Length: 405
Image (cartoon, rainbow, N blue to C red; front, top):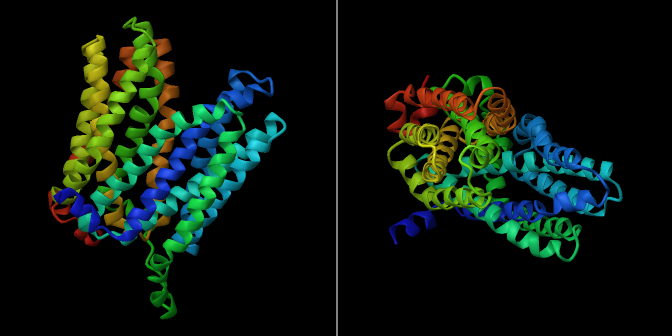
C-alpha cells in the first residue's frame, strides 16, 4: 500500500503523461506486425522493408535536437500537441499510401512526430516533478510505455487479419484522441510558466554545453548510449543469431528470452525508481550498468541456454535501473528547463541503437560472437566507469545537483 500511496502523491501530470505514453506505445506496437505485410503488398523485398523501419528511427535521431530547441522556444505542451498531431496524421496517411515511396515518406514523418512527442513529454515530466520523486515518476512513465509495447503487437495481429492498413488508421485515431485529451489536461502545467514570462524574465534554459559540465549528466549520456547499443540493439539483433548458430537452440527461445527480460524490467521499474530517489542516481546507474555488463560476461562465458536466459534477465533488471536513474539525473541537471539537453540524452540511446547492431554484427561476422560481445561490454564498461566517477556528495541530494560544478 505504501508504494501505491507514493505514486498517488506524484503530480497529476505524471499520470496523464503515463496514459499518453501507453497509448503511443500501444499504437507503435499495433503497427509493427503490419509494416512488413503492408510493404509486401507493393512487391518490395526485405531490404525495402528494412528501410521502412530505419526511416522512422533515422528521422527520430535526426530531429531530436531540433525538437528540443522547439520545446525551449514554444513550451512542452505546444510541442507535445504538435508532435502527437503529426503522429496521428502521418499514420493515417501511411495507411492510405498507394505506393511504397509514399509509405516510406510518411513513416519517416512519423519519426519526426515521435521525436517531438518524446522530448516534450520527458521535459514536462521532469519539470513538474520534484527532485525527490523524479525516479518514481520516470519509472511510472516508462512502465506505461513499456506495457504498451508489450500489448500493442497482440492487438496488431488481430487487426492485421482484417486489413494491413487498419492498424495505421487505429493508431492515428487513438493518438489523436489521446493528444486532444492531453492538451486540455496539461493546461495547468503550461500556465505555471506564465507568471515568469509575463514578468519579462526569460526562462532559464540549460544548454547541452552547460549540462555537460555536470558529471551526472555526462554519466547519464554515456550509460544511455551503452543502453541503446547493448540492450536496444545487440540484444535483439546479434544475441538471437548467437542463440541459433552457436548454442544451436530453436528460434522459439528468442521470444522466451525477450519475454524474460521484459517481465523483469517491468516489475523492477517501480523499485528502481524508488531506489533512484532514496539512494541516489549514482547507485542506480552503477547497479544498472553493472547488471548489463554482467549479462555480457555471462553469455560469453556460460555458453548454454541457461546462460542465455540468465543474461536476458540481467539485462532486463539493468535496464530498469539505468533508465530511471539516468532520466532522473538529467532532470536534476536541467530541472525540466533544458529541451536540447533532454533531447541529446534521448538521442544517445537512439545513436547506440543504430550503431551497436551494425558494428557488433560486423565484428561477429569478421571475428566471432565472443569478440562482438566483448566489444559491447567495453562500451557498457565505459558507462559504468562514468557512473562510479559521479561525486557521492551529488548523488546523496539529487536536488542539489544543478548548483554543483
